[in-house]
Image 1 (cartoon, rainbow, N blue to C red):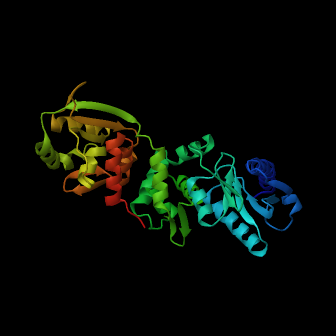
Image 2 (image 1 turned 90 degrees about the vertical axis):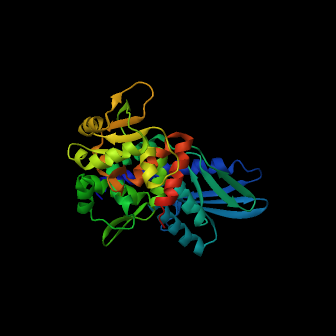
Image 3 (image 1 turned 60 degrees about the vertical axis):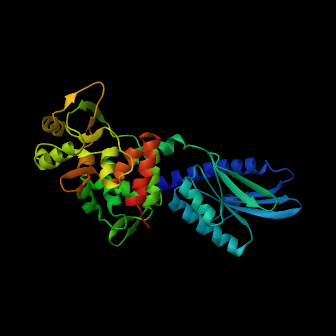
Amino acid sequence: MCYVQQMLNTRKLLNFEAEAESLLRGVLAKAPGLKVQALRTSLDLPDTGIDIVCSISVLERQHELVCEVKTTGQPRHVREAIFQLKRYVAQRDGIPIFIAPYLSEDARALCIESGVGYLDGYGNAHIAFPGFFVSCTMAGKPTAERRDLKSLFKPKSASVLRTLLREPTTPWRVADLAKAAMVSVGHVSNVRNSLVERGWAEIADGGVFLSKPNSLLDTWRDEYSPPAGERRSFYTTQHGSRLIETLRDQWDGLLQHGIVTFASFSAANWIAPFARTGTHIFYADEEGLEHLCEILGLAPTARGENVAVTVVDDLALLRDSIEPAPGIHCTSPVQTYLDLYVSGERGREAAEHLRRETLQWS
């Protein structure tokens, strides 16, 4: 890291330390009878690795709050802070607390599991000691955090994530992952770094792998929006098994001209059947749709559709398909799960069923 960057990071930390001190005082002020007797910051605590030590009295008992402050609350940095706090309180009694601008659900869980209190600038807090207890969880995420997550789940990055989620414990070299996901090496590196920062991935000798695929999928699900594209409605006289047999007979030829795949509820019917609908749902490109219309005799309709096709902008999504039965092509279990989850209450139930059946990772 260059000298200028080091100076900027140091200045950013010192500025947030002042805010962290204010946050801590604000929380403590809520307890009647609690008195802050002394508060020392990193400038007063050289060579300790600790940023704030606050001596208090409550109910005639003395306590020392030991706080580590960081400008990011990503799980990787949380683990570093927990290690520093544990090392400090092992030598001197104290109540360990981690403070950051924002702490994700995963970061907060790390603190709780380690017996460390936490506090962030968004209002999340969990601090407990004799005579004092506060626990608060704020809904939503800060704008900056949501923006970062949206970037992580954009189409090019999503192609990398879908590739990793096929076999989460398989390590990938950056070049191999870039080839499989059909994105640049630089883009894979950025995604890898973001996943490691958030504690969802680790880097081993064989490359990067997902250490917490469920946490990644949970967050993606909560931030997910259906793929961009044009949804078109059709009617066909072919129904049920007749439609399926027609597709099975013609799908290989169909894929020579374009890309078509079952999606959402229609894909789930083949992967993990749960809820059926009267409409067959597809993703396709323009050529695929054109040939699908020929094969099934699709007629555009404004009412009474029994076939819905989304011509998606992200063609990588179409390439990430599976063949659960001979001649049947569906979106992958991960993509199907995401699409179901945003399809109302019935879709959410189907999504959770599919996840239990096909997306169980230890």
